[in-house]
Image 1 (tube, rainbow, N blue to C red):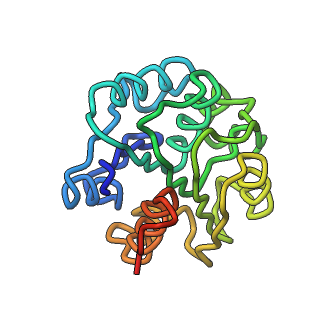
Image 2 (tube, rainbow, N blue to C red):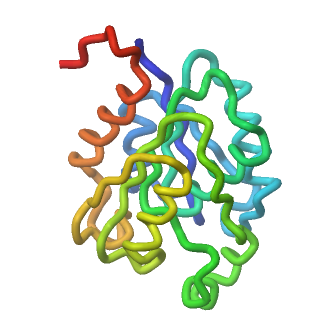
Amino acid sequence: MTATLVIVPGLGDSGPDHWQSLWERKFGAARVRQDDPNAPTPQAWAERLQEVIEATPGELLLIGHSTGVLTIVHWAARSGGHGRVKGALLVGPTDAEDAGVQSAHPALAAMAPLPTAPLPFPALVVASESDPYVSFGRAQAFAESWEAEFVSAGDLGHINVASGHGDWPDGEVLLSEAMYAWAPPEIDRF
């Protein structure tokens, strides 16, 4: 069983050298393109994600980074999920409720408050211990409230091009784990 990846970028639409864009090309993933990638709103960004889900056939695995993670959790809270969405890899969730983050990027305030209900599908939250957009403890709290698995990526900044993560081989290992998290127990993954 193989799911189609759905790339859900954050602010600025994850440029061409970002690991999300590299994965889109490498794995033939679908991609969510917002009308204004610098002005997120829960409703508009969740609606665009819903459009991409409806237009993409088969079982799906959502791949969110930064504000893309927030898009996924807002979409799940609004829609209750979708039967073909089998899981999510949530990397570097941005804390849109943090005053320092809002000060640095005022547009992110529109994504607050963040949904804290359990997600309706398995998810893996990956957080850096040195992410300027979310404290490590807050990322852990998000994972706990969303009933998601949690993985420390170590000291990787925001896990983006600026922190040296265009190509992200360790992320592909985590992607593999996320893809198989929802596999029925009778499937041998090894």
